[in-house]
Length: 134
Image (cartoon, rainbow, N blue to C red; front, side):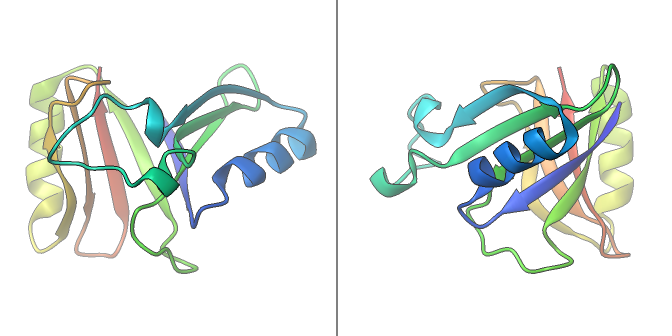
């Protein structure tokens, strides 16, 4: 499944509440950075614990948008990603390895507390892809 993933500079919650009202949708998920299990490789500053780690807004039966507050400064035109949810680690690794060639890895494709694999890469054409294998 492919979904747009919007990145925000500390105002994801505010934006998603506006989108919920604008589209008559339903926010079905809000995870905060403070909800994450502690990880010494990914420390979260106290002032960032209330920021949105992951939000999901249901617009229709099969239509969703997702988003989060980014830990790196987002600029217009570079503040979204194409989120690809796959059910095969092999398919994910195949696509990942092709897209990272001449690209830039934002987050290595790796096991996380919420997925078998998750990562983010900008391909050589300037498009950012987020991979999630459940």
